[in-house]
Structure formats: structure tokens, C-alpha cells
Image 1 (cartoon, helix red, strand yellow):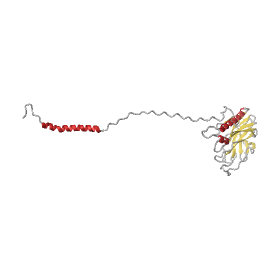
Image 2 (cartoon, rainbow, N blue to C red; image 1 turned 90 degrees about the horizontal axis):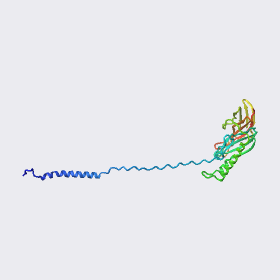
Image 3 (spheres, rainbow, N blue to C red; image 1 turned 90 degrees about the vertical axis):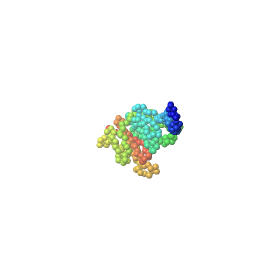
Image 4 (spheres, helix red, strand yellow; image 1 turned 45 degrees about the horizontal axis):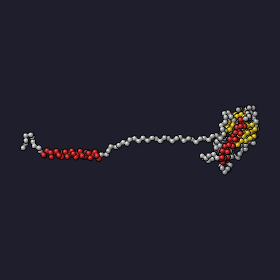
Length: 295
């Protein structure tokens, strides 16, 4: 029976909403569970700043050894030896001649086979080419015997050898610093020929021709022969190449290397070089003839 205020409370209505509430409650719990099970978002670590290590200090190149003998003054005639283990030297103004033609100073630079050590001799010749005095400035065998091992401190033998070289070079340069020495005019330098044909070079209007095998030097002005000279005392003619040497090196072959002349002194200096008898076989230094030049 209904009251005047409205229908009575119906328990069935509460029962009807209960499943809905339960379902909503379960759905909320499931959402919370899923949220709890989900992995956390990635965390980006802060950047790590690493100071770069400073570059290593530069490695200084090993200091070059000073030259064995001091440099020559500008315009001076003389010799400077830089290193006994290298096959070069400074030969300033050489060959040189006295103004009256009475003496000539020449340098002979030999080839030291495969080692390449300096082999240098300076000679004083008279006006006819005869030997007056000789200065052996560098000997490869002495260098090989005294040279210190790589990175080793110089030995007493090496220091002594350099001292001897300095003394000899000073003697040569002192000689050339006194008197009236003058450089000679020079022809082009000739290479060793591939055959035995005579070689010629022209200097100051004179043609110099050397038949090396016949040891004969001929001078011409134009087509006119103005001088002939036998050089049998200057050098020897070796045997033909191809001899049976145990080291595989044949004999050296002479050739016309260069001509130097002084019109004032009326002299020419003839340089005869030597071609090696094989690869890494070495060769003797030049020899020199001094001859008059007819005007």
C-alpha cells in the first residue's frame, strides 16, 4: 500500500544497480593494476662532460751535428767538410791557380763504393803538373773504423779523426788565403761516355779533345791544332772491362771530365775522371794535367 508521500522503497532497485557498481569498481581496479604493471618511462641521463686530454708536447727533432769544419767566408777559396760519412764537400773556387801560373791547387773527390763515405784529397801541383804537396782530408777506411754505432756517443777515435780533419782543412785554407790565388774559368762538366770515342769540350775559344785510350790531348782553335800533349805520366790505361774480379767489379775507365783555364797565366788544367767498373764498385778521384795554352 502506497503512502501519500510516494511509492515505498523497493529493495529490488538496489539489487539491480549493484552489478553495475561492481563492474565499475572492478574496471577501476584493473586500470590501476595495468598502470602499476606498465614500465616506467625511460629516463634520459644527464650529459657527461669529459675534458679532453691535452695533446702531447711536440717531439723535438734530433739536433743536427755541427759541420766538421766551419763555413767559408763569402768569396773565399777553400774547402769545407760537413760530414765525413757523406760523399760531398764544399770546394769553393777550386781548382785555383797562382796569378803567375807557377802552382795550381786541385781537389780529388773519389767514389767510396756502396758506403758513400767522404774520400777527399787536395793537391798542390807546379806549373807543369808535377805534385808539390798532398793533403789527404778524408779517408773512408779511417771513417769506417772510427764511426760510432747508431745513437752512440762519439768515441775518442771519432773525435780524434774529426780533429785531424779540421787541422788538415785549416792547413789547406790557410795556404789559399795567402798569395795571389785565383779561381779558374771552367768548362761544362762531362759525363762518363758509353764508348771509347774521344771526347771534346770547348773553353774560351779553345777545343780540348782527349783520346783517353791513347792518352793524347789535342788543343785546337777553330780547325788549327795549337797543341798536343801525351798524358802517359798522368794516368794509366786500365785493362778492358770484363776481367774476372772476385768482387764483380771491372777496371775503371778514364774519361775527360772538365777543363779549367786561365788566359792571364796561359795555363789549362785538364781533369780526367774515372768511370766505375760496375754497380757499387766505387771509382778513383780525378787526376789533373797542367798544360800551356797557346794564344
